[in-house]
Length: 136
Image (cartoon, rainbow, N blue to C red; front, side, top):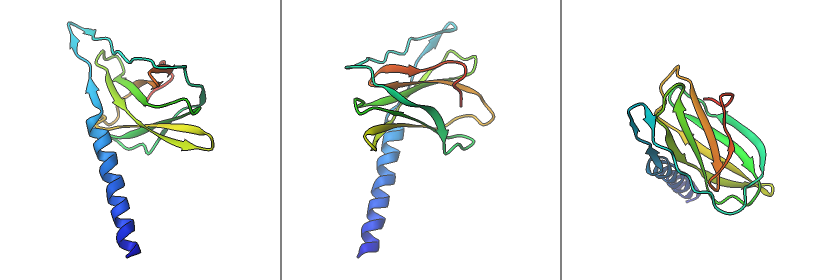
């Protein structure tokens, strides 16, 4: 009985993660070498960035970007693009409460192997970190 409950929990967790990954991905449109501005609406007070972004579970076509903020956060996302490309992609992530703070985690899929990407992290729509030093 306990094994069945654990299998069900694991299956539901995987299904939830898959739904989150595939339902939250959107792309901006590029016309005439100009990128459409990605609008992410900031809400409330800007969260405090406690731990800089870092990569986890890096695979040839997938990577998880994680950073830590205070408890003010209700949503998180990453905007990324290939180096020297104007096409930007927005991916929404999920939050995990930990020791009085929140881990912000965004899973990026369908990356091209051996390709450099720039990214920027957002919590509650507030830009917390970006730049050329931040890349996948």
